Length: 426
Image 1: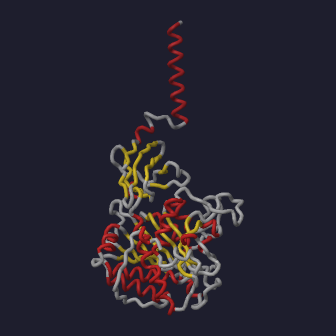
Image 2 (image 1 turned 45 degrees about the vertical axis):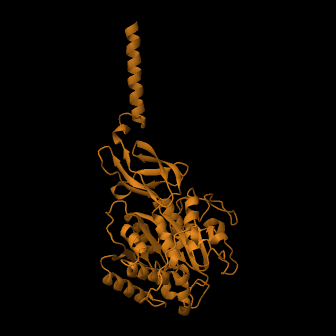
Image 3 (image 1 turned 90 degrees about the vertical axis):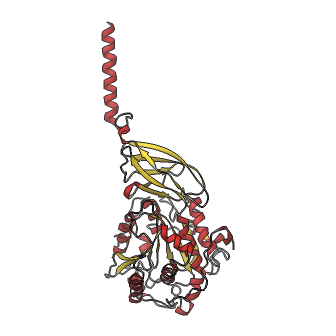
């Protein structure tokens, strides 16, 4: 394994009060409430909405500064159990919560991370489906869908092909409403049935795609491959075995382009990236979808370092604040990185923006209403570049003609000036 390329956080000798067993929906909620009550200064438990059957979609936020008003503080997230019968992710995320809260103040690496980042963990996006699933069933689809028999990972709007994936489910809508509320930069959704880190695109941009058409690369493929490798190489076996522990699979270094594996339209991964500028990958963390409880401890051992190291990649690339000439924050401006223009992103609350990028020199283009500007910057290894930008909004109405009316007025004034000059010469 080439884990030496990456920061490995090894926490040894920890004593976990959380048992390696399956936690049903009520047990899961009880645990989240217990953690929030026990660690109120560094956790916040909140619901982003309800399922078809009325269950809350709980998220536990962890960090020193839980307010979204801390300037340029990145937020990261994990979403588990999107498919109700793929349950290992629920247990992994509960144990990750336990690791974070019990290590805060004693482990310097994790403490520093939680002092500067907010981690949001949703152990189950599909508790209704989980309730229908059966322990010991490694394959099959019993419990996969939500209570309306809809696959939630085929239910997000297909922004490329401008088509609906059926009625948007309440679980899907809750995620869509959640994403813009925080400065989410990095994310992963966890599944089961394979052992691989899957990155965008999950679909082909050509609506006439066919299976076996090869990769569907996104403009940030270099970054996505890097963060996927951080996970797979930090995992105990994912990269080392190329995911071949699962019969019939073979993924070089334990990663794959989504469409190259099999195309998915309406997936959550692509929606995060295309619509909200969030770098999300899909993690398949177990060959068996619903293993026996006695097998759960090994999954935590295999994934612990990978789960920690992956989120620490958030402090890379560029971030900054966009303001106008009067130092007022500009929210909703369109940003693009030259050479990667097909996936724009936007400034959020307080004019803040974030973008994961590999080391190199870049140019960022900014557009808001009719005003534009460009800035260059450099990203170095293992650091985030701060690049604040000022956009002069007055120039859009004075120095630059960028609207039809502006051009017409300029033309008419020029015509009158020339006509007057000609009359004066006769």
